[in-house]
Amino acid sequence: MFEKLTGWLKRRGGKAPEDSSSVEKGFLVFQHTGEVIRAERCLQAAGFSVEVKGPPPELVTGCDMVVIFPLIMESAVRRVLDGERLVPLNVVPVSGPLLEPVSLYRTKDYGEWFMVQAANVKITVERVSGRIVNVSGGGCPDVPYLASILVGETIAGAQEPRVQGHTLCSYALQKAFLEARRIWRQGEES
Image 1 (tube, rainbow, N blue to C red):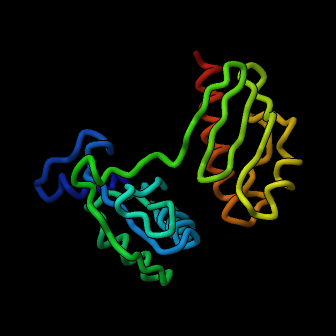
Image 2: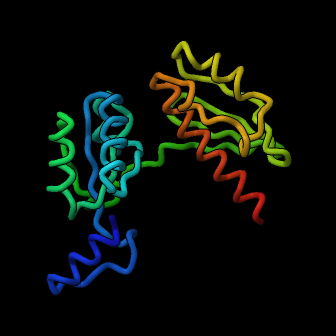
């Protein structure tokens, strides 16, 4: 999507940004977390570069996630959302540090292990082997089942939680799992 945006700007005589990090961002605020999940999926399927983060404290609405998108694409994003009958409560430009969304993840270093938390769900991984040693948190009925599948497996080879999970907690666990996998692989490369 960034390449499309860059091409569009150049064709119209505008200056294309150097990379996607220099594109002004906005975020979509929804009432319910399920709407955030649906919005993320449909926008990614439509080719938009979006990510889910936590809202700034001033904008917490009961849903602790927002969808970040390139603000210049707001009209196209709204068309996709309208087609899915998803109506955000608000569309907010990231116009200053007080409106900067926060990371959805919290990472804790325990020496031989590290833990990644997304929302209220946590996954702990042994650094050397990449073995998942614990899954906890949330309050959804599928977390114990997912824990029984994941604990003892390696973060590199384990089945992603989204395959077996069907709740908000499994969505959060999927996010934590992918972040833990990224951190572990980054440690392997160094």
